[in-house]
Image (cartoon, rainbow, N blue to C red; front, side, top):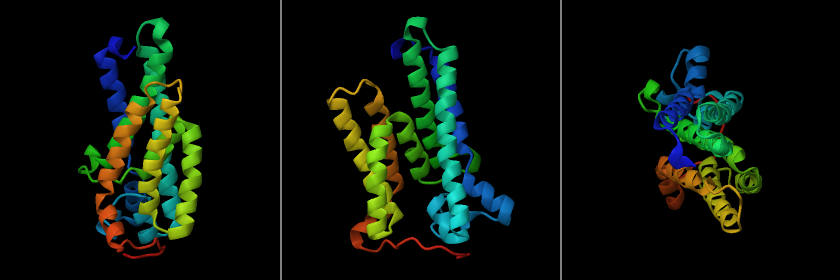
Length: 221
């Protein structure tokens, strides 16, 4: 059980996940490929949408895959650390599960507030999306269909991120209420969804005012 975990193990798993999240795909691409910083243009955000607007769809796709991939890597590395350094053998499954949850959640936090890049990262949508598949693929599948429908209808990525995050939270609550065996799920999903909504607060304000722009691709530098 979580109460029996060694505090040092929890700290190690959390730190590893956070540092993996610090690896900003958008900044790595913009610096290595363009000798520039994507945060100087567009929304000032180091994420997929701003990469599409500044450098085009190709680099936006690479950014999405990189940001999603690092969360998946954090999840499985967290499981590995949890299994090796965890608690009593009888609770091995719990330690592996919690290791993955802690590391992936902290990777989303590290993406949003990277200490290696002056705490100016992305908004966490791609990383959180990958985390949803790692935690509960059934809910993630439902939300993916919702996300595609919202994007095709309105072409607002921020709207997709916000509504999909809320839908995932609702879906996991329903799964939890119906007896989904993973009792820790909702306790990790809730703060990550809250973080995404906080990171998108300006987008939410623009959406409510009808001022949020549809995504466009090109060189806007």
